[in-house]
Structure formats: C-alpha cells, structure tokens
Image (cartoon, rainbow, N blue to C red; front, side, top):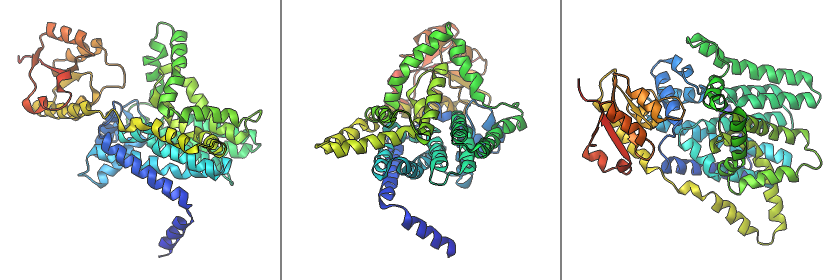
Length: 461
C-alpha cells in the first residue's frame, strides 16, 4: 500500500502537459508499429540475437557486430512470454523505451529553456517520422535515445548526478557504440565546471558498464573486444576505399542532407538555427554538453558512410534547441498556427512508403525455410529472407554480386533469392554455375512484391 501510494503521488506530480505528450508518444509509436510491422535490414540481426539468447545461447549476443543490450532485453521479453512473436517483442521494447524518453527530455529541456520549449521539443520527438519508424522496424535507436536523454537529465538537472549519468552512458554504449560520446562529453563537462572528483566518478561508472561488453565477449569465446563495430566499420568504410580522404570528404558532405532526412525537414533546421540563436557569443557549458556528443558522432560517421539513421540516436539531444526556437517563433509570429501545421506536415512521411514488398520477404523466407532441411542454407540480397527462413542473417554490409556468388558456391546452398533490379549480374553468374530459375508457388505469387523477385535452385545431385 505504501509503494502504491508513492506511485500515485508520483503520477499526480507529473505535469499534465507532460502526461499528454507521453500519451501522444505512445499512440504514435503504436500506430508506427502497425503501419511498419516489418523489421529493417539491421533489425533482423537483433531479432536473431534475441531468439538465440532466449533459446539459451547467451554467446550469440556477442557473435555479431551489433551491441548486445537491446537484443538481450528483447530476449528477456521472449522468455517471459514464450508465445509472443519476436518482431512484436522487439517493437514493444524499442517503442516502449522510445516513448518513455519523452519524460527525461521534458525535464532536461525545461531546466535549460523553459516549459514552452520542453512542450515543443517533446512534441517534435513524439511525432517525428523516423523517431517513430526506427522502433517499429525493430532497431536499437529507441532504447538508445531513452538512455541518452536520461544521461542528459541526470547530468544537467538542478542537482547533477554524475554517477547516475555515467551508468546511463555506459548502458547506452551497450546498446550502440556512440554511447562512448556521452561518457566523454560528461567527463569534459564536469571537468570544465571544476568538479574533478565528479568527472572521475562519471567516467569510472561509464567504463565499468561499458566493459561488460568486452567481458561478455571474452567469456563466450569471442575474445576481449571493446566494440565489435570499430573494426567492422573500418573494413567496410574508409579502410576499404581507394582513397580514404576522398571517402571521408564525400560522406561528410552528404551528412547534412542525411541529417535533414533523419531528424526532420522542419526540425533539423530548427535544431541548427536554435544552436546558433542560443550561442550568445559562446554556448554555456550545459548547452555545449548537449551539442558535443552529436558533433563527435558527426566526425565519426564519414569513416563508415553517411546514413539518415545514424544521426537520430544522438540527434535527440538537439531537440531542446529546436523546441526553444520554435516556442520563441510562436510568440513573435501572428499566423503561428501555420507554423504548427508546417511542423506536422513535415513528418507526413510516417504515413507514406509502407513497405508491402517486405511482407513478401517474410512470406518467401518462411516458405524457403519449410523447403530446406537441417544444414541447408540459401543466398539472398534480402537479409529478411535469411532470418524468416530460420538462417543466421548476413553481416550488415553491401551484398554485391560477388558476395552472392560466393555464398551460393557452398554445396549446402540450395536456393538463391534475388531482387531483379539489384542483382542481374549475379543471376547470370548463378545460371552459369548450374542454378536454374523456379516458379514461385501460387500463394507467394499473389503477395505484393513477388514480381520483383527471382528464385533460383541448385539442381539435385
């Protein structure tokens, strides 16, 4: 009864406006999960890791280039509810964490810029198309954003909590490697404000949690690795380019456009302008601390390649600047409702581009899985087909014709599924290697997207 009473009082103390924004965030993410119910290309790797862990294979959490905390949480949900579809479990974890991020975002924005800014920052996050779609597609951004904003709220609140912020930064690192930027920014902020002891406790807490990844990798036989993504990103990014400098500059120039796509057509300009507007000659230490992790990430992204998805994890920390500027504009403009409509309309892509062809990939994968025996595998330029066929998804690299031909050369490879518009060269090579095209069953031909796929089979020996 005492615990219940405390909970009721906590809910009562939550500002009504924040409660409404939390409901909006939950509703939008529930809608996103319905509209975009298929996992993304990287999402299937998280699903595979979660399923293997739920089945008792803890080492599979450390056998991929992705960090383990998000699939660990999905696996726990699967253990608690064994009959729950893994896609639904992953959406519940990702979308639930994403919606909860509204709460610390409100408090950190109100602390720095006031309640009106907090209202609009949270509204932008609640309706942002990619803030909604990434969790719906079983990506790790939802959990990462919750931890990133919790780090900011713990560090920049009225009573800074360096140790708690360090724990949040370390946990964020277990979700995505850019969590390291949070730990670094926190140490620099605390050191700059003259609290060296707090800086050391923050850094030590973050390091202690982050090192769990390396320890888990070592304990499961994969060697001690601080982050498996570092070597992988170098291998498929600047390290594989003919000109490393050229590769970096090319993707650096692409980054503003991808940030515009990933953070919002209206929201991203508000973020940039809001930072400039609030600079007042030089940003105050707390405001600079919100900005620094995103800047650090932007310096690293071109080492791999620019992509609109990469900016949303730490880009959420720029929403307070966008909210502050938007609130100020509403006070100065006469036709303020037009600005609100523009903001809402700019996120309309949530309702567009529903990936019907991905539904076909699920159906195709399930059918192929039913046709193959234990030990047989497949080759495909569609990672979702691998997963839904019950096979380990390939690493998140470009699937070139050469990769497809290599995968198909294995005697265990029975089927090859290709998208026509991407893999004509591979199809010709497979035909020369003895594969022949086979007709899809009638139930698959009726699914949208079937006409874009060709299925090849190795002749029986």
